[in-house]
Amino acid sequence: MLKDHGQQWTELKKSQFMGLLPPGPMKAGTYKLSFDTKGYCKKRGQESFYLYVEVAFTITNERHSFHMPLLLNPWSYTTYGGG
Image (cartoon, rainbow, N blue to C red):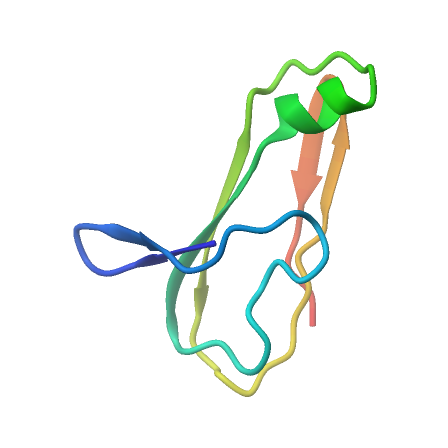
């Protein structure tokens, strides 16, 4: 997980799957998640067209609860934010 500080992204946490986000409310700001999709597929013996997927998003309401699934197959992906 990276946070945008104007002209620079700062790594907040490096994780695999569960516990990706730090516990507690997220501070307002712009963030980016980077998924190593090639590595993920390789560990499962699957082919992957995408090396990685990056999802940038903005949090404006610090009290809002949300989830952001990444649905992946070897040739496509989709993501959405929900609360």
